[in-house]
Image 1 (cartoon, one colour):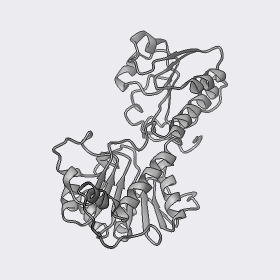
Image 2 (cartoon, one colour):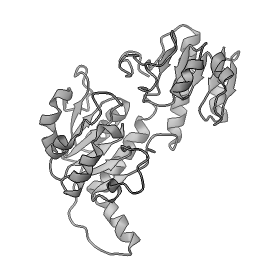
Image 3 (spheres, helix red, strand yellow):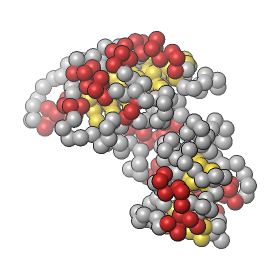
Image 4 (spheres, helix red, strand yellow):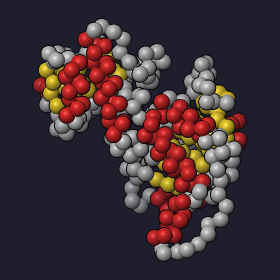
Length: 319
């Protein structure tokens, strides 16, 4: 079997993959762009290739992405090829990033950092706490679930929104579907968005919903920048109605002259909460890929299989 590895790997990652299939023919791109013949011959691709290149993948049986978002690939796969994402790898890194941003905003640490840069010794006044707050998480996949779990451990009352309310996690105090969002926004001190790109999520937080949020509430977004109407967010932030921690923006990268940079009460990081900055994330992606390679060889179900129609990970066989 020919396996094309289109993501960075360390020696131990190679050892794990090759131990699963000792007779496999592995090609490691290590940052280089794949050639047309490599794509044509590959039966398994581990890592992200451009969706535009999928037309060359004539022999493909499995594309194992190294990211959780898979909407760009779902309807472009070659006939008969399976698509799996890396859900389950990013929850630790991104949820901790969210907690970090949340505490920076709640404790006004971003203001004190600004003051430090100005050599300014000044008290910035009252702060808030995760304990006793109401945390609304919209999207309870791996990332949203891990964030809600951490909020619960720190004393928050946790409300979740996802596509169905069956089998509610033990750390959720209340569960709803998206139809309840408008009634929940005024109750929440924290609103966390961990949504994939879809027709339902695009511009989910328009100006009307942003203004329904409780005054002083904190909005976090780590899914897709398109889930928030950016122009509306600028207006609402400038009014001082809410604060926001954003690891994703729309547009992205955010232009240097964009007014969002200068809004009060906003923290912006350049879509880096996941990636490979945390070693455990990198290791987990490789473990998922090795597991699915082994399953493919032995005719077992693929974990994290993506539904072609919805672009979401199927609820069964999650990693």
